[in-house]
Image (cartoon, rainbow, N blue to C red):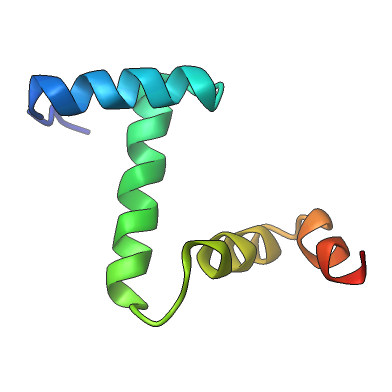
Length: 69
């Protein structure tokens, strides 16, 4: 674990997003980093595709139930 220096404006964006998403600032930052890494590694996938794959990998049943609706 380490300290990452980010721009003050970006930190404010993370803070605001973390409030909306009910995450800590660190959790919101980790989420954005993870999604960004997955998006770079899989440029043909949409955000929704990435989230669906991650939910399925975590064996979350809601991911498969949205298709049935």
